[in-house]
Amino acid sequence: KRGSQAEIDFRLTRLQAAWKKQDPPPHRVKPLPVQVIRRMATLAMHSRHERTKAIADMTILAFFFLLRPGEYVDTNSESTPFKIEDVNFYIGDTWLNPATASEHQLFAATRVTMTFTTQKNGVRGEIIGLSTSGDSLVCPVRAAVRRLLYLRRHGAPAGTPLARVYSEDSGPTPEKIQPRHITAAI
Image 1 (cartoon, helix red, strand yellow):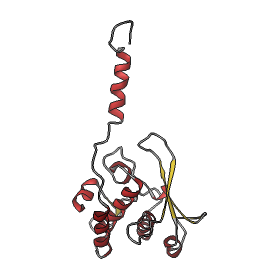
Image 2: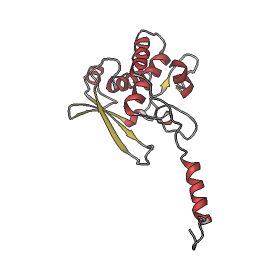
Image 3: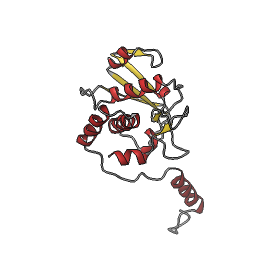
Image 4: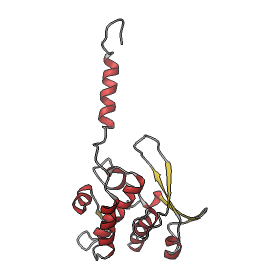
């Protein structure tokens, strides 16, 4: 404020306006009930469609890691969804190399960590870890393992986002899972 007047300095007003453009507040939505996620996971387990399985696994990861759409699927050109290189697995304190660990070792993992390259609170490079939920389907560790193994089977490089599906229609370029796919599945 300048002097005794109640108006804010124009430079601060411009700075605030720029900040609002960079990081608008998220639209508030109600969290999904776990019963909806369990149903999605059960249907995906019996589905022959890889997109259905990917959508269910990405929804499980979003639920457990409290993610916004741009953190787990592509929303626009500025989104930074999790990539293969952002995920690590552990059995106890023993790190499993996601590129070389066997399927058996990965399914024995007890913890998954995700590196937030850009995060909603502005902390870059923060690593968040979760343990198994005790459920074979609705579990952040199992969902991340299923995504990793699927992408590895298709020869995806480490920079590939987890929310990708290879299909006959997409050819060698994987298809992006987008918020509209998640919304349609719910």
